[in-house]
Length: 327
Image (cartoon, rainbow, N blue to C red; front, side, top):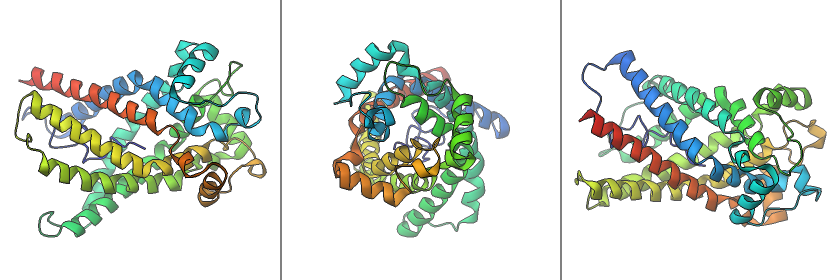
């Protein structure tokens, strides 16, 4: 589960240690917010669209053992990344790699907006600590405020996240289960109730904290150890990219099981509760480990690493173009 909305991610538009040049002095207040919001939204949309095929493969592999068509044997299981790529192209057509991407792009804009909105409000509630003299208190409050802000924005956009998962996890060459965003949400509300669209919400919030914790610690450590941190050229840029991705992969690995459980719970939302495979987060976790082994918690992680790298390259390139324009 990779959260580029973390303010500590060097590729996040909120991050002060950005690759891009700072905005002009006159761009303040609402105007600065809109510039950052739009720039981040465009960068996010481009990154998500270009990496959509990899993300769809990741979701298919991650959720296939909770997919009724695969459980019943109607559709054979995917044996790996290459097998999934070739079968999606042959069974559903090349454009199917972008199934659910429109929802993913739409979801990104309100997520960014609410992250901005919640960030300052929630941060003001917590006491202030110095990162050098009270590191652990600073770390704990940052983790708590970040988790609370993430939970706030997630509460509002979670149905879109659910719809993205369901649209992208459709398998086989027949008619898709859902024709689009509205159809997905309506059928889910009719079958499982409105609140069933929030299946996996709790474990998603835990996943945000599980990602932010290791990311914050690992990134700061590697950033201090970086011998090229003062380099303004391509070497410094590349070193920041490597550190960012190393950190993202480590944090993503730690938080990935939470993402797997979340996706599995989302896969049953449109059914009546008596037909659910899993009764909740703990039941889902225990059944996955018992029936499929611990390794099943990391299904699709290889594709997730590729998606993270691809998205980061786009974002770094975008920031570099902004820096050159600004200079």
